[in-house]
Length: 267
Image (cartoon, rainbow, N blue to C red; front, side, top):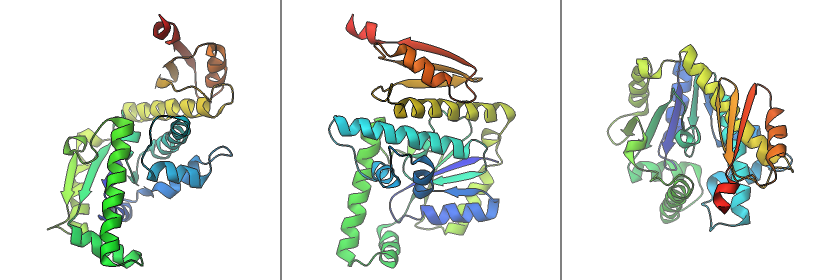
């Protein structure tokens, strides 16, 4: 079993490929709407979370800290959804949201413009020119989103294990190609890799709980986990004890180390 992420431009066939893989492999298909539902809390509605995934970031400011909260919730929801394997996520930057995952097949799907226009016109009540404008805007927004948050070019092939161009192959052929890859040792879901995925999910959950708790919600921290021991680094100022209290209450945390970088920043 494996975890598959599919990155694609709007109407490029990513959803079709995900559904084909899900049907043939018996994997769960996870998209933006599933994540928004799983990640939503009283402080972050499904609509707000969808907007955080769809809208490109703006200049640094208060709204971007809200985006930090939304992304922390999204990362936790995605990591928890896929940590057991047998999952296909088709949505923006899944391979980046799961950065560090030890068993991840990262796909990039591209398609000719005419392919995309046809799919868009089947779904949207727009003229051809309006569809072309819509596709261009969505692609630009996604490129800006990944560049701002992760400092990478969304279309860089080096970010993926496999790039599939649907110009000359069908969805079924692409599906068969992907299935032929997941039996390779690089994508086997061993016990050690499963434990590493659980640690990744735990770190994401701790980060989300810190972002949600009113005593620590103003902080932006780096969180890692190994064997249930969680390490937190960031400028914490006078909130070290609050960080320890909130993080220590998260289920499956068996140990905790906290490093306050504020003295270094102010030195």
